[in-house]
Amino acid sequence: QVLLEESGGGVAQAGGSLRLSCVASGTFFRISTMSWYRQAPGQERELVASVTGGGLTNYVASVKGRFIISRDNFTKASLQMNSLKPEDTGVYYCGCSTHPNGITDNWGQGIQVTVSS
Image 1 (cartoon, helix red, strand yellow):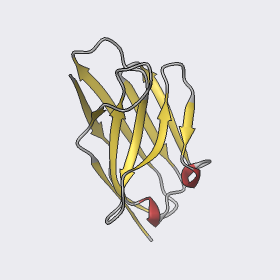
Image 2 (image 1 turned 120 degrees about the horizontal axis):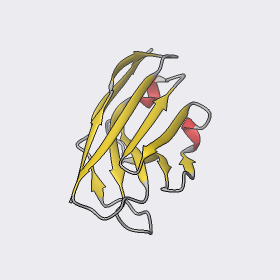
Image 3 (image 1 turned 60 degrees about the vertical axis):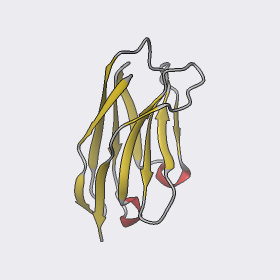
Image 4 (image 1 turned 30 degrees about the vertical axis):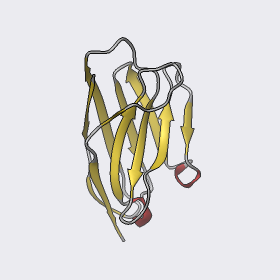
């Protein structure tokens, strides 16, 4: 079982920056893909960005050019969020996959990000 701990959320003004971090611990063989999701009030959870063990990244169109996901090692991932917009507000969840297919099968508790206009 994987325990994912998120940190770094909070409040920022539009145009500002925040950095989220996620650290995995527990008993597992290997983590393949690590991802960040977000859920805005009244909306479904969406994938924001992901990074594979090999460093391949993927972003939702709305954050391309503003957010950067990085992998410090096989158990830690960060999300640098720049040029924040009010529509980036939501609860951000770290997810990871312990399978080669990369499908998320472990979740963090979530961390609030609020962007004020």
